Length: 117
Image (tube, rainbow, N blue to C red):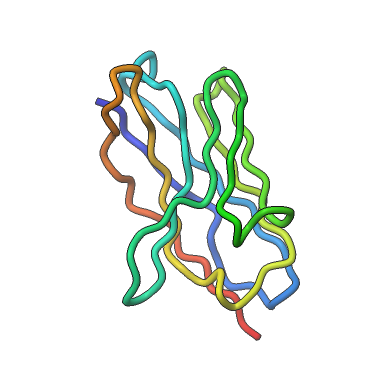
């Protein structure tokens, strides 16, 4: 199994920026892709951005042009650079991994992002 630890959340005013990090440990050789998800109060957990081992990225429409996902393979870490934050970006942000066999890893504890208007 892979263990994930997210960090970097906090409180920010609308229009500001935050950077999140997610460090993976354990069976990292199983990882094919890493992704960020978020869950706002009372809502389902949705995918925000993904990045494959090869570096291909994809984004939810709501964050395109504002968020950037990147990774450091040597550190087994994925990042989420968030710019032009909006109050609707307020959520707990989680990272997760997809294994080569198609399965997904366990969720980390998440990191809270609060954007004030």
